[in-house]
Length: 387
Image 1 (cartoon, rainbow, N blue to C red):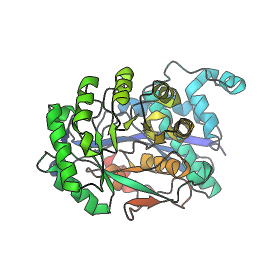
Image 2 (spheres, rainbow, N blue to C red; image 1 turned 120 degrees about the horizontal axis):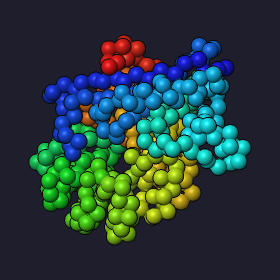
Image 3 (cartoon, helix red, strand yellow; image 1 turned 30 degrees about the vertical axis):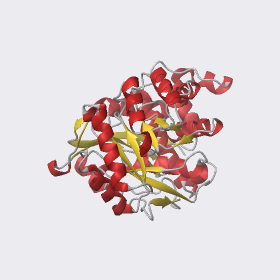
Image 4 (cartoon, rainbow, N blue to C red; image 1 turned 90 degrees about the vertical axis):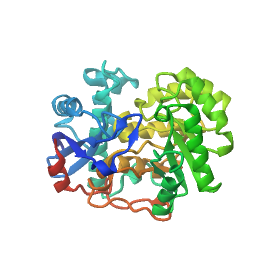
């Protein structure tokens, strides 16, 4: 079997005005992603997703060009059933033969940024092909399941202090979720406003619903510590992206001074950046985004790093149906995984791109049994929203 073609499309879906929300990213007016289609000479098709931004909106012309005009040439004509080897080919380029022969990387200069995002999309599609070829779900190929079912948390939470309780309770009621996540940080203008919203959320939900908070990296280390101290009594499940990913030292300092678990990693790329965060003792819960960090191949390696250091993994799954499926399969197979992110913002890329998504039952999801990623793509949706 050989790879016949690789095609990336920019999907751009406008968000209706009445469904838009405001965060530190501004008002969200669209949902965007790069859809990757890999076809083999036997007719098998695998689907992948690559992201140029961790938020819902972004410009994707450069990323689709990297996939179509650069990375495609690396993998076309090769056997798609070797995703680990093709990952090395994309990462090391002309020196891949050295890397494979000598057992250590010789990375191309573009070993971060959009090149890794593009490789992520192709890698996910290769695992989809491998699963379909073997008639097995991807989690089976990753070593089998360590979880039959995983809980999910409802991800959203932008409302004001007087409305946040009702918003989060609505999430709980919608899917019997036991945990919810809300946004804090610069969008609230002051630390005390963030504190007031979190305090209101805890008062409304009571002690039995887990609450995560996500600052999108917008606090300074000092303000993040002030916030953490002021919400000590709220019993938070984790404090996500408290500071910029560029301030690893500040994140480590925060972790030393609070007992709230620190979650981070949605903007980190490859196992090497996660290795550095672990070595700095800056992280408790690793959150790789499969469509950004290096695909299924690299996210599985990051999950192994988490396990080796007695840490946990909870992938960043705010995106489309394909990247969600990739993260879901990894979590089913990874002993260090414990929970799934489930977007409850207006997210047509997750809920409409697939013909049918994995159902939420009792606040969680059971391991899928269909081959590959286990989802079928809605071709009408793709045709309508290709930019």
